[in-house]
Image (cartoon, rainbow, N blue to C red; front, side, top):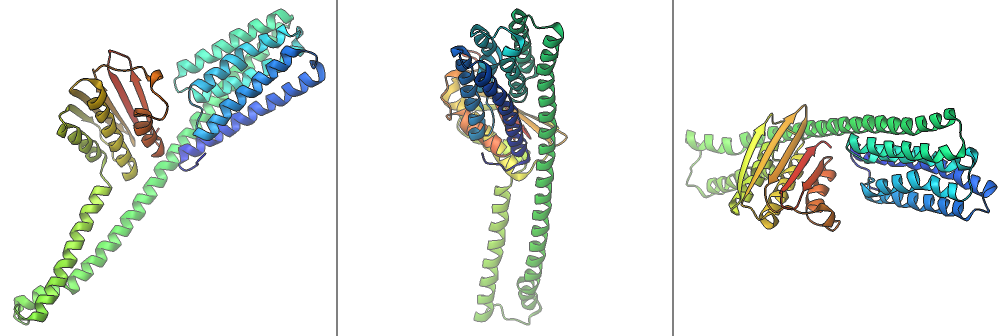
Length: 375
């Protein structure tokens, strides 16, 4: 996994932390099965299930940079909810015998707490774990205090993981903002120094030549004077081209979005754009945002079956949110192959710049793309 921005570092840490948490639970499971349940085929099957699912969840998170949605959902379902009943069916009818499979529910709730973006999804996963684990413990005759302590551990694991993830994500965003501010300040100092150098060069060359001609000390028609004027005219042209190139490389937030809107309109799409509370973000992030808006509007042109789109830009406290909405034919996101279309062209651009993108679409009801920076 490539670790670059503060947000990427926060993600890498949470993948590592939850992975170690899961590893500690798997060690307990291996020891329990080897020492006390080696004759139970279902206990071995449950252990293989837990190991395989864990490798899938954390291996994918390691390679892709984050958990995604379906691997943690599969983890909650199999390791968190199904595993205890598999072990119970294999003969683990005492609380101590089934405890290792129940223990894995804590790390399953931790993964769900950081992997699912919406609090309602986290609450649903934790509620499912609490319900199935209470049902799984009850036939073993476990004391109410034991069951309550275990269920408390599941909830606590989710709460702590969620709090840690919120804090690290916030600190990562602050680090990215501070880094961008420092880079912008350094770039501004470099531009200032460059302007001073150009001013001195202009004073010593172009201005000196014009002053000499105006005062009559130099003959404007003389060959040496004409050659000097030609060299200095070429120098001025280079300065103008350099300034234009810098403006093209580093558009502001509004300029980046406006450029995307104009590009789509030039192809025949009618775009209604609204701006509210614009804030300036680092130039690379603004460029990525503009490119993502361009691709979202291109997607409307290519696939939506409508000639109109709506773009809304809002900003506050260093945060920018852009939504691109159309009322076209829509699509089913689950049927779109991984790595194509909006996921790659829009989502990847925003992630690489420290932002995020969400795509919501329903067949027949249009598409809504939300772009956020920072994530």
